[in-house]
Length: 138
Image 1 (tube, rainbow, N blue to C red):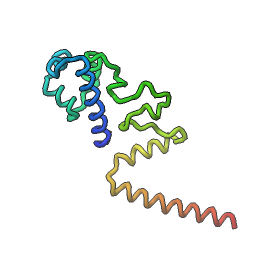
Image 2: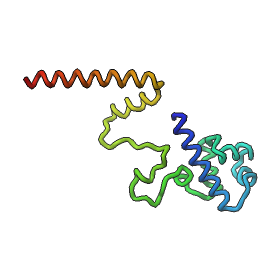
Image 3: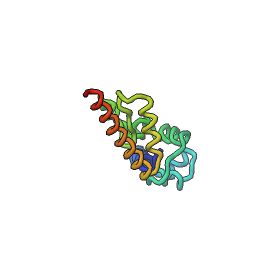
Image 4: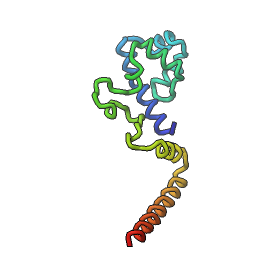
């Protein structure tokens, strides 16, 4: 997961965990004891400085009596799944092929200067294909 997305996820989880804990009227120390983690670690999660493991995340949801969907920022009241998704979550376009989805995932892992170079190559390839089509029409 890219750093920006991981931070967006940490922000979302931290905000919702804090809201759920306050709604229960318990302190960070009480929450951390019930979850079975240190208060320092719990506070880092709530302050959006750490992402919990899946096991700890599940324990947090159970102890705070809140849906994992809510903690992840999904809007359960939205009839449109695209609108229900939080900013860190990106659904693929329905018409994207598996190959295109795979290419996009690969591009996201590349440094910006390499993505710029790949974009320049793609533009040249588009021009070449357009010229070939024009030649066939003549």
